[in-house]
Image 1 (cartoon, rainbow, N blue to C red):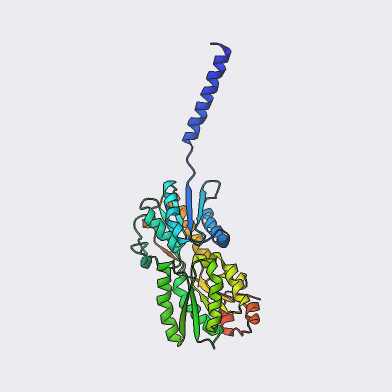
Image 2 (tube, helix red, strand yellow):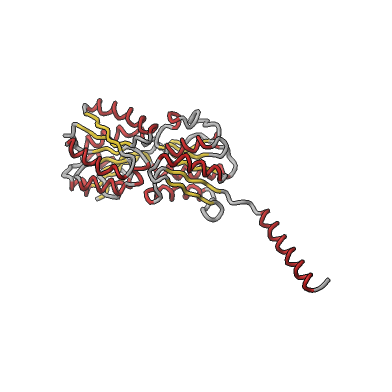
Amino acid sequence: MKRREFITLLGSAAVAWSLAARAQQPTMPVIGFLNTGSADGYRPMTAAFRQGLQESGYVDGQNVTIEYRWAEGQTDRLPEMAADLVRRKVTVIAATSAPAALAATAATTTIPIVFETAADPERLGLVASLSRPGGNVTGVANLNAEVTPKRLELLHELVPTATVIPLLVNPTNTALTESVLRASQAAVQALGLKLHVLNASSERDFDGVFEQVVQLRAGGLVVGSDAVFTSRHEELAALALRHAVPTVYQNRSFIAAGGLASYGGATIDAYRLAGVYAARILKGEKPGELPIQLATKVELFLNLKTARRFGLTVPTALLVRADEVIE
């Protein structure tokens, strides 16, 4: 055999060996992360999700890949985004909002789904039962929507002279909004107050919302649970300060941005738990056999600097109950 032919044959054999070896290497699993909001607004939550994965031995970019899909507040984009993740044959879908979870479950009955939602997953129709979800779905519920009445009570404690309490909801998030309104109506009736529902489905609606609050001469505002609102926590907190509207929100991110008070489920921990569940599924466990986890801890955060700006005296009882008081 000529030397040139031998070298060519050797090179071809090396390439074939390399391709065969690469084919034998396990494919890195892919998690499709689907959310109604935006990446900037959810940085603490995505970090918590990755932490949950890491606690179980999975590190993004090393032995697992996360593909993010953000609807940027446009709920109608979620079905196509979910369908795209299905077409890409991701290993697991992490659907981290009620609309995202509903879109994911409508898109596939075979790819495992781990949801994180603020509402009761049974009422949303995501699972058959909390103890044994069945099918390809499991997840974590922080029950943020369920504690909305407590936010109304909190605003009443902070502004006891208020007789009208506006509640901001996202009308496009139908299932979650219906749950919030049911619970809230009963709460304001018990307090002897009047509930006024305001709608916003995107940041473009926010200015109009605060103008309505001022026109109503309401004592404040309660912001309902929704990914659109969480994604735009800085904008909502800034508008409340600009219009001098005492506002109660759902989590700490609003308070860090200058908001007055927040009361809600431990969202960060819920995302961490969702990451842990995603890792367990990657290791071979079946989602339908993993019971729904309830992030039952609720957190109260207060911003005294903002309270002073509004001329409010925060009751000592609230200061004692608070998980954190920002001075």
